[in-house]
Length: 381
Image (tube, rainbow, N blue to C red; front, side, top):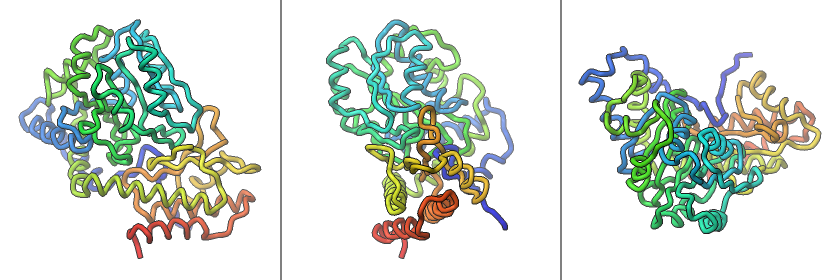
C-alpha cells in the first residue's frame, strides 16, 4: 500500500516546500552588496521571532554551536556558572561548561521535572559570584517546559545574566525576550523555524554584552566580537542558500503572526495530551509543554517497537527516550510546520501500533479526544 511519511519528532521538523524552493536559488558570492542586502534584511526581520530589538547573530552550525558560543563568550575558565540540569540538553550546558574549565554549580533535577524560581533564587543566594545562569526553556528530552518568565523576574534587575536554550522552545512556547528581561537566547533552524538543520542563532542583551567584552575564554570561530564587528556580514563564510531559506521562513512566520504561532502550538499540544490520556497512557513530564508530548511506555510493551513500527510501517517518525529513558518513553512532537491533521495522523498511527503490540486500544478514542480539543478551540468543525 502507498505510504506517506510524516515527521512528528522534535527536530528536524517538516520543511514547507516554499522554504525548500527558496534554497534552490542560485548561490551568489557572500561578500557582494547583493548578498549583504539579503542577510541584513533577513536578520533584521528575524528579531521578531525572538521578540527582541537586539541583533540576531547566525552561525553555520546546529543549536549546540550557539550554546557553545554562549558559554565561551560569557564565562571565563575557573569562574562559576549556575546550570540547570533536568534532561539531556541541560546536561549539554553542563558538559560544554566543563569542557572549557568552568566551575559548574548544578541544579540537578529528575528528568521530567521543571526547575522552579525558588530553586534558581536559592542557587543565586548561595553563589553570589556566579554571574551567568544557563537554563533550558523547553527540555526536549522530556517534553518539559519551565517558567522562564518567572525566572527572568529574578535576574532582570540584577547583574546576573540569564541564558536560555530555545533550540526547540522558540515559537512553540511564548517568549518575549526584551519584555521579560531574558539576557541571552540561543536557537537552531531545524525546529520551530521550519528549516533544515544548519543554522544556529544567538541574541544578547546589553547586560550580556558587557560580559562578552571582558571575556578571555579561548575561542575563535565563535568569538561574538568578530560577528558584531562585521554585522550583518559574517566574519566567516555564511550558508548563503540557508539564508535564502531563513528569509522565506521569517516571511511565512510573520504572516501567521507570533501570537497565532504560539496558540497553534498550544492547541496541538493540548490535543495530543488529551489523546494520550484517552488511550489510558501516562504523560511523563510533570510540566508538559507544547514542543512534544513525552509518554510513558505502558507495562509489557517494547518501547523501541513503538517507534519502529510507527516509522517503518505507518510512515510516522516519532522519537524514543534518550539515555536512561530509552525504551521507557516515546515522544510525539507538534512542532513547526505541523497541522491538526498531522497530529491526528500520528495519533491514529499510535493506536494501530499499540494494538499490534497487544496494548488494549479502542480504535478512535485518541483521535476523538484530539478532535474534541480542535473543535473546542475553533480550529475545525
